[in-house]
Length: 276
Length: 104
Image 1 (cartoon, each protein chain N blue to C red):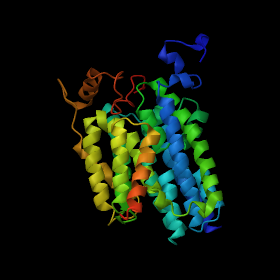
Image 2 (image 1 turned 90 degrees about the horizontal axis):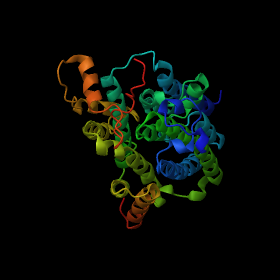
Image 3 (image 1 turned 135 degrees about the vertical axis):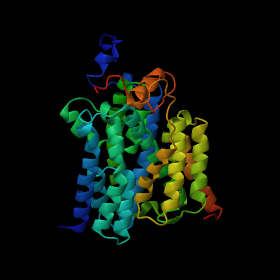
């Protein structure tokens, strides 16, 4: 953060450690607010799990090792509902299979070393992916990933422990409307992407309709994956000249490989530095 | 082995494998711009589907009107670029108030 370390060449900045100053203005505040929001979610997860009859170590260990909010909620719900360990694990895995898609989308932002990749992989969540995809360039994406990821891991585990210790002290969490907090968090996170990208908007809308319609008839987790059929609503970018993949790449390049103004998540993983 | 522990370990191991997909495969599989765009939009689609089902459904049933109404309040606040904490408190608060008023 001191001036001697500063350089104007983005290539130099992607190799070293992440700095707070790598984040665009306001992003750290947004990240901190997500920490605060997930703190509430974590406390309620710990409390709900213990109040539902699970031993304290179950939500705590799950948060450390699984570290995925919605999967933890659904797995704990199956366990407390008497669905059994196999069903609980399968439900959670089905929900978490989407992290493979997030993982591919944010892989560039973890860093080059194996330690960074192996540790960073555990920190890939809906929230970190959303923060990464909302950043305009490679350097700020890496900073957003590590700063939001490490902080979120700490906040999540401490808050789940606190919630589990508090146990049933919260009473009926539905009374406080906390169940509306998690979808609202996701909505606020995804809004920049759907605001600026027509393809994401069309595909997301169709996918959401499919997922909601399928929820009463499919096992938990499957509807969200089925939502990917919404991708058929995407329209190809206007392509000039030849067809085929090369022209598609050229069309995207013509739009600008790194949109500097508005964050356009459709293009973010396709950074020009990617070896191909 | 304790059934709870088996569940947690299986879920943890499988989830970590999913998370390793990107770091392990990236650079070894060549992704076209088109595929990368599909992956990015796909992630957005999953998030939207997750929030839609989370807002509307409880298990396999309709969650009642209070929750989606609260999420909608949060969405309007977010659209108007309200601070994130305001979005969360607004969503939870609206849902809590509607339930207090007797809405399911």
